[in-house]
Each structure stands twice: as structure tokens, then as C-alpha cells.
Length: 609
Ligand code: ADP
Image (cartoon, rainbow, N blue to C red):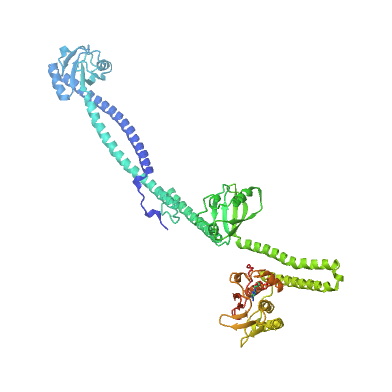
């Protein structure tokens, strides 16, 4: 599990951090500007007031100094001006200027209209800040007079108002430096505060990104006891829950995928647009696609079978599954039939109709069906011939031939021959069907193959003698034991001996040999008969196959003898093979596993005979 807290996310690239810093700094700056503006106004007022008080004191001192030493007013004014550090003007109560420290009094106009003089005449003190008519610059004036002494002169002191501005400028500079320093401190504090808030958010955001990338083992390590700590805790709980859910989903997906991939049938899920949303491996292989070649594409693009499109198109109206067989022509070498079973499926979640397609290889089923149809056709045909003859002979007899003693007997003989042929045919058909269907008794007993061979040879001795055929039996010295169904094996050996005697001319030889070896048992029937052509040899085990039809019929053959032999051998877990040379003879060999290896009955495959 990776703990995101260990990683240090790049803090200074965080827009949130800068936004918080900007907001905080703006607030600090606004506060500083407003307070400094207020401070400046207040300080200016205080400064002006203080200077007025100061000037007032100076004016009073200058006034006292005049009274103490009146002397030459012009000289006294100059001296007092230097002493007090201000401009001094001495004014009569009528407004005429007696003396001025900075100007020549005679050139100065009457000052009785000056606001500070008017106010001083009324209240004893007058203050005014204004443009000096005499000097042209702004001055702060304070005039005082002693109201208790009628006719007392007015002493006015003045100070250049720029002094106030200069003092204020100094104050402003100090304020500015303080504001700048405070702003810097505010900025640093904002950064610290923003980092304190942003860092955990960044850690959680990074962890969320890791989870989004699929790294579900990510967790956040944070020990804070505040809302951000709670957020980290909630995030970790969410991540644990997500891990468990995803694990569950993954397990479900694996299970589903294991089931799907181990299905013997192909499974394809098609949405309402005809696009494949799910396909298992079998389906992909069956439809000749690469891995994941089906999913995400319309089915018709991968499977060029109009019948399948029609099948899917017919689904909306139906409720039950529909099945079709389609011949697959993609592989011209090998004929293949695919069975498609389509089932409509309504996906309530998405509100659409899906189709589930189950695909299986029906080639064998198709072959079996064809074989069955062929078998039925052959059986009908085989039955028809003797039945037609029997019916024809009976008709002829009924038409009057029955009264003719000369023809009656041969006709009845023919009817008997055809009837036995029919009986043998039906019996062989039933035997083949029983053997092919795999039903019947299980082989539970050991039996000596020598005994079966001897029994069959005994049964055929007479037929062999009739054709002067030398029928010889070669048995093993010790019993040739195998898990053998006596009745079936006897019928197989009988069929081989029937054929050997039938297809061997007079004075020929037929040898029946039982052998026992490491591989198992074998029973061989060898004749010196007509033999079978090489091209016909592989087909002799097919049902109703005859090399020479007329000859076989004449011999009373049904065309099923070797098919029975083959099925009996297969039923015993063995096999049958044949060697033959035209004109020289044939050799048929049944090979069986020995008793030790053949303890169970193998199911007889319904393979084409
Ligand atoms: P049938 O009832 O016609 O004998 P089988 O299935 O036993 O049918 O044999 C199929 C065909 O194989 C026969 O029609 C015959 O042409 C040929 N055949 C079978 N055994 C022999 C043999 N020993 N020698 C020559 N031909 C044989």
C-alpha cells in the first residue's frame, strides 16, 4: 500500500494556494491602506492642532515680551522672531501693521480684515491657515491680544504651512514603511496559512488521482485533528471500501470469465445496435477471429452469415430461444456446420434488448442427421426389394399360379428366400442400431476368444464343406481371455466367416487364427477368395456398402455384416482392419485389448459405418 503523505506535492504550483494568498494579501492590504489613511488624517489633524497650540504659546510669549520691553517695535519684532523661530507681526487694534519681522510694515496693507485678526479681536485668539497676501505662500497664522486691556495691540505669529506638509511627509514615509513591512509579514503569514490548508488538500487530491489511475492501494497518512484530518480519514475509508468492492467485482469477473472460457459452447452478447459487447474464447475461435476481435464491433462485420443477421432481427418479437444451423463456408477444405441459439434478453438497467447467442459446432450432429436419413433411405430401399418380390410372387400365385404345381413350389421357394432375407436384414438392422446407439449389456465377464472362434468354425463347417473349402482353426495354447460379450463377438466372427466362405471359390482355404500378445488379443479370418479392390477396401465397413451388389444379394448378404463387425470391435475397445488383394484373398483382423486392460465397456460411438 502506498502512503501518499510521504510524497511532497509541488506546493508552489498550486493555483488554490496562490488564490488564498491573493485573497489574504488583498484583505491585509485593504486593511493597512484604510488604517494608514485614517492614521494619516488623524495625525495631520493632531499635528496641525499641536502646531496651533505651539504657535499660540509662542504668540503669548512674544506678546509678553513686547509688554516687557516695548522699545523700537521693528527691532523687537526682528529679535523676537529669531527667538521664537516664527514670523512676527505687530498690529494695531485698527488693523494697521506696526511692525513685521519679514516685511516692511509701511508697505503692508491693513490687516484688520484678516480672519485671525478678526477672531483675535473677538475672542482673544484667532487661528487661520491661508495664502499669505504679502508672501504668496500658505501660512498658519495665530493672532493673540489681551482683551482685558482695551486698545492693546495684536501680536500675530505665522509659520510656513509647508512645515506641516514636511512633517506630514515624514510621518507618511514612516507609515508607508510600516505598511510595507506589515504587508510583507501578512504575505508570509498568508503563505503559511494557505500552505497549512492546501497541502492536505493536495495530498488527498494526489491520492484520488492515484486511485483514478487504478492504484487502489493508495492511502493518505494524516494525523491532524480537524476537518482536513476527517477528510483524510473519510478518504481512506472510501479507498478501503473501493478496494474491497473492486476486489469483489474482480473476483466475480474472474469467475464469470473462467466459466465463460471453459464453456464448450461459444457465447456472444449482442446489444440492440448489433454490436458485440461480450464474447468468450470459444466463440472467438469458432468464428475464426483473433483474441478480442469480436468485442466492440458489429457482429455482421465478423460473422458474414446472413442467416445470423436474420435470426437477430427476428428476436424483438419473440420470447423463446430460436435455433438455426448454418453451414460455414469460410474453410473450403473442411465442411463445418454451426448451431446458433439466440435468446432475447431485456436489460432493464440500460432499457435495451440484448441477444445472447450460443454457438456450437453442429458438424457431427449434422453428419449424424444425414447418416440417419441415409440409413432410413437405405433401409427402406433394402426392405423394398424383397417385399416387392414377395408381393409379386403372391400376386402371381393368387392369380392362378397356385394351382399349377410346377410353378407353385419354385414361387413359394422364392417367397421363402426373400422372407429369410428380410428376416436377416431386419435382424442385422436391429443389431447395427443396438450397437450404434451404445445400449445393451455391459461386458462384465471374461471370456476365452478361442471358444468363440471354435464355436463359429463349428457353425460354418458344413457351409465350408459344401464348397470344399478347408476351414482351419488356430487357437492359443492357453485361454485367450478378454472382457468379451459372447453373443456380439460370436455374431462378429460369424459375419467374418460368412463372408470368407461366401467370397472364396471351391477348394479354397479359410484360416481362423486366435492370437495373444502384449498388446492384447486378436482374431484373424484369412481366406483365399476373390479379394477386394484397394479403392473399395476402406469402404467395406460402411453400412450397406457392397463391392458387387448383385453378387452380395445372390449370396444372401445384407451389406451390414462388416458394419456389425466394426461396431462389435469398437464396443470391446478394440478395432478391426482388413488387408486384401484381388484374386488372392482377404484377411480381416479384430484386435482386442487383453482382459487386464479392458475392464470397462467403452461406449460405442455412433460413428459412420
Ligand atoms: P455383405 O452382406 O454384402 O457381405 P458385408 O458388410 O459383410 O456385406 O461386406 C461388405 C462387402 O465387402 C461385401 O459386399 C463384399 O463385396 C466385400 N467383402 C466382405 N468380405 C469379403 C471377403 N472375405 N472377400 C471378398 N470380399 C468381401
